[in-house]
Image (cartoon, rainbow, N blue to C red):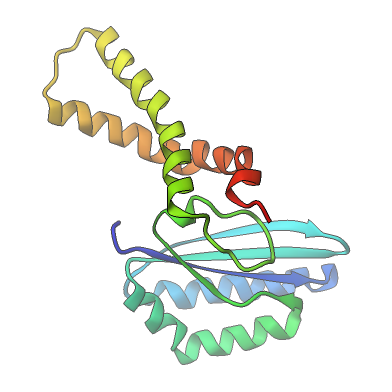
Length: 180
């Protein structure tokens, strides 16, 4: 979706508070689902030293929808309760566009790489996939219109790029993308 945005926040939680925090996460999800423009959420749970780290990414259809959620009394109430359980919290970060493909799991603020680097890594990932997909379509012997061919390609390649290829490319090129 062209105008979609994501909001990312992380909390480090004492393992003794794990169930209470997960109950709060469920409550936040129930609350945010009622907001127009909410698309989905991702929760990444990992271990960070003696703590559990929860990174929550909320996806909205537009910056305005995210802003309504951010300014809502419901979000403030949930955020206050969650922060009270957290040993450490990161500030909320808003991500738009391609930089959501280029995020690493870290508690430092996300500073997207320069656009030329994002474009280069995306091209390096996309070129072989498009080439393989074109060969695969040709090998089937099915003659399709450009529109059908493009539809099939995008149905396959967009999820593949989003969930499989780009996370791996980000790790592979991390030193170049994030030299600091």
